[in-house]
Image (cartoon, one colour):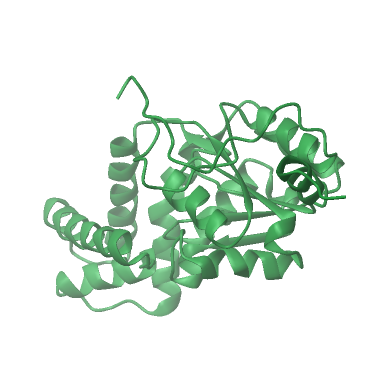
Length: 274
């Protein structure tokens, strides 16, 4: 007997084995305005370099750093590549006509730069509850983050006490490519030893998270943390406003209990507030 489309989907999602999640604005949020944190990052880096004996005018150093940072961010956005912070710091020193520090000191400079930002990232109220619920359901869990520092991502996880939940942590800094590039998703799938069809991705960005996940064949849930993005990106199979809603949806899919049809994969509606 032929299964209906809804029955087929219910059968497929009942085989779910793994959940992959985004980090920033999905599991954690910034407790201070981004501009304040970014300025504190630059100050922290400048203070470290000054202690090493390098003579640096702060204003001139900050302007050079920001110019190089923005150029890296622009290229990352266009080509979906990642330029790690260690490269940005090294280039800033070269442009400032300073002797390039050794690799070890550059790595320490990276840590000094990101220390204020790590402190600023805080868990959403339902993050730990959600991760615990997914672990209790025996899901394999991984994290994929677009970030300029692999160290910073692990530091944020450790500082907030959630690193233990993840069997795989993949960052754009470590791979030098960004979501939605498929390679970063397939790397996480390989780490977990699962197929895309057995995996759900949960994230706040339609372009980076949902579109990327769906292109490699994963199921997807959009956590609506900010206004809906342009309609040309792939639509998620479900949209939620809290992480615990995402966990409940995944549990329902795993058990084949679909109370209503999944949202179509057509364009998302525009947010009336935009």
